[in-house]
Length: 250
Image 1 (cartoon, rainbow, N blue to C red):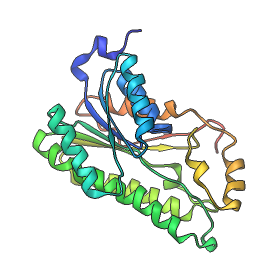
Image 2: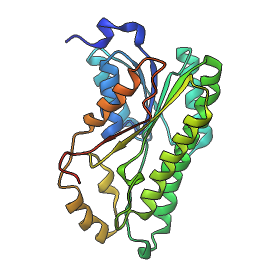
Image 3: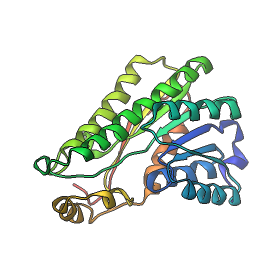
Image 4: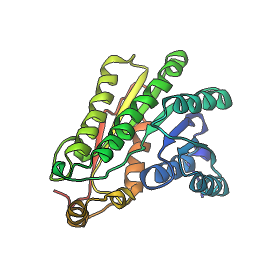
């Protein structure tokens, strides 16, 4: 199989993908590695990261794995610094780690609200804070944020989740406006995608609602392809946002 690594090695980038152990993160790691990029996989489930790393290497790609909890600011900074120490630079961070324990507000699942804020918002900020000094020193870099259509709409049970994803969109858009043009920013906004997100919903009402909402799904690689497209543009082209959803999702 001919990959981008065989035909266009000068475009290879060092890419850190958070939440890489499943779903969109896993699909993104597989696709970017197949296209010739050096991929660093970050997530808490090291057994899955190791298996994914071995698969990528067996398929001829380049990958390493790092245990990473994005809610730990120091840990995120240390992982990014290790990537730069090992590879000499970091070109892209794909801020993909996220959780979606939906519930109605009157269910008062406050601990789950806190978890979403810690992972979906603070985790994103930790990633940005870790890479920006390196991007400034290098004279360039690319921040990719995986948000959600929940960043643009609110439905029953999604109030807190949508708030965190709107925050992710707003933070990334703010970075785009503030940063030097050499630092590109992209928000990837998925609709319903095959993933483990819905499995973490503990509220019975939200579980029932999501069975209906998730009748139409697209594979995680559809989102990985969008990320690949954004990364593949020339340096003077900044893809600000891509919304990707099932054709049947209205």
